[in-house]
Length: 119
Image (cartoon, rainbow, N blue to C red; front, side, top):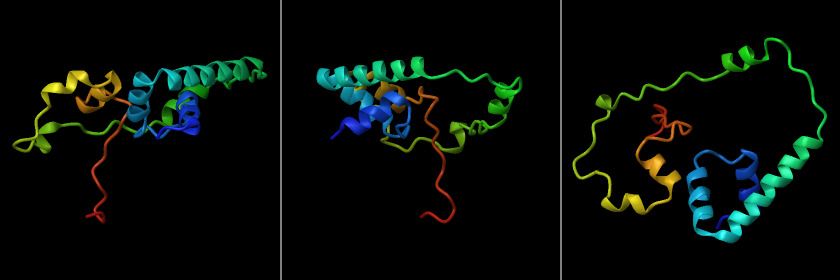
């Protein structure tokens, strides 16, 4: 069950990216939850607008870009699709965020291979 804490994390951007498609789908199907998330968005906006501004250092943008992780190698030839594992015909019925996740169009989710010690 998606509760108020998850909705608050979703609105603030603090929700684990792996759970985002779940909450996106929940919000697309539950108008009351969507209304609560909109309220959290408005409250967050009010808090941000009331906060004092702090000037950034001249190299703040470059420092942030330097902290970014490199993009993973998404070469599908290294991981061929197994027989019988194809997209379902009813994928169009899923919420947009879930379709993007399942079709590989959501670039914010980074999937890594398990570490060598995980079997």
